[in-house]
Amino acid sequence: MIDERAYELICCQPGLANEEKAGLRKQVNELIARLKAIEESNKENSKALVDTINELSVTVENHRKEMGLMRKQLEAKDEVNRMPANEISNLRLQLEDSRKHRFGRTSEQRQLLNNRNLDKSALHKSEYDGSDKKDDDDSKADGNETGSNGTSDSTPAQNSKLSRRKETAPRAAKTKLKVDKVVVHEVDEYYTLPEGGRFMKRNGMPDVWEYRVIEHVRVHNVEHVYEAARVKLADGTFASTMGHPLKDLGGIFSPELLARLLCLKYDFSMQKNRQIRLLAREGIHISNTTLNSYIHNGIAKLKEFIGDVFRKFVQQAKYLMVDETTELVGVETKEGKAYRRKYLWAFFAKHMKMVYYHYNNGSRSSDAAKSFPEHFTGTLSTDGYTVYRMYDGEDSKVLHIGCWTHCRRLWVDALPSDRTAMEIVDSIGDMFMNEDLFRTMKLSGELIKG
Image 1 (cartoon, helix red, strand yellow):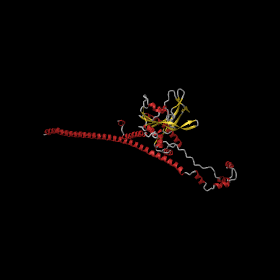
Image 2 (image 1 turned 45 degrees about the vertical axis):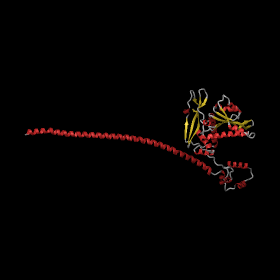
Image 3 (image 1 turned 90 degrees about the vertical axis):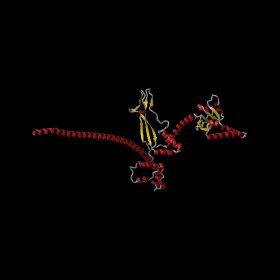
Image 4 (image 1 turned 180 degrees about the horizontal axis):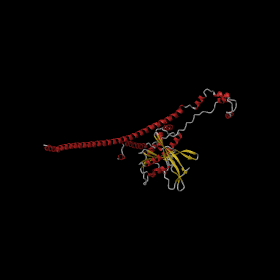
C-alpha cells in the first residue's frame, strides 16, 4: 500500500510541476505583453514629446520673428514720433522768439515807463547852470573817478540826474543751425595717397580742415562734414584732397534744398521772408542776405544748364520757325553802361512748343544766323530777309520755306496804293482757315496732301 501511494504521489508530482510550469509561463507571457505595452506607450509618449518639442521650437521661432518685427515697428514709430517732437521743439523756440518781439517793450515804451513821473524838460532847465555840455561831461567823469572819496551827501544829487543815453533793446542771441544728424567723411574714405605723397602735418597731426554741407530732408537735417587735407606730391607740388562739394552753388545747402526754394519762389510765389520763417520752423536759420546769395547763384547755374538743354532740344526739332527782332541790351560804352537796341534771333520749335533766343553780340549778319542751326537738317521757315538765301543752294541740308504771315503783311501794306491786293489777302486768309480746320479735325500730313 505504501508503495502504491508513493507511486501515485510520484506520478502526481510531474503533473503538478507541469501545471506550475504552465502558470509560470502564463505569468511570463503576461509580463512580456505588459512590457511590450509599456514600450509601445513609451514610444508613443516619446513621439508625442518630440512632436511637442518641435511645435514649441517652431512657436518660439515664430515668436522671435514677431518680436523682431514688433521691435522694428516700434523703432519706426519712435522715429515718426521723434519728428513731431523735433517740430514741436522748433515751434517752441520760434514761439519764444516771436513773443520777445511781439510782447517785448520797445525802447520808447521802456523810457516812458521808467521816467513817466518825471518832467525831464523842467528838470534839465532847473539844473542848468550855464556851463557847456562838455564841461558837464568832464565834471561827470571827474565825479565818477573821485566818487569813492566823496561824501554821501553828493550821492543823491548824482543819482537824481537823468542819463541821456538812449536805451536800446538787447540784441537777440544768434540762433545756431539745428541738425539732427552729423555725418563725418574722413579723408581716408574718399582719398588714396598717390605713390610718394604724404599728408602735410601741423603739431604732429595731419593738417586737415572741414567743408560743411547741409542735406535737407523734410523735418530732418543731416550735416555732412568732409575732412580735407593738404598733400605734398612726389614732385614737390601741393594739392588738396578735395575742393568744396558745393563750390559752384556758393553755399552750404544741398541742391535738393535749392530746388525746393526755387519752387517756393517761382512756382508758389512765396516771398523770401516767408521762406525764411518756413526754414526756421524746420530748424534751418539763415539770414535774408544768405538766402538771396544762395538763390541767385543757383539761378545762374540753372540758367546755364537750361540754356544748353533748350538749345539741344530745339536743334533736334524737324521744323523751325526763325525770325530776328530787336531788343534793348545793356552794353559798356566809354561813358559807362548804356542801353542800345540790338538784334536777337528767335528759333521756334512749334511742335515742341519751345523757343530758343540766340544772341550773338547783337549781330544780324549771316554768321549769326548760321551759327545756331549748323547741324539742323529739317524744315526752316523764314521771312524774305536776304541772309536766309544761304539755305536755298543745292548743297543745303535744310528745306527752306517762306512764311505766309510775312508775305500777307506785305500785301496788306500794299492795300492803300492798290486795292486789288485784297484778293491775295483773302486767298491767304482762306488758306489759314483751312489750316485751322485741318488742325481741328486732327488730320495727318498725308491726308492733307491727298
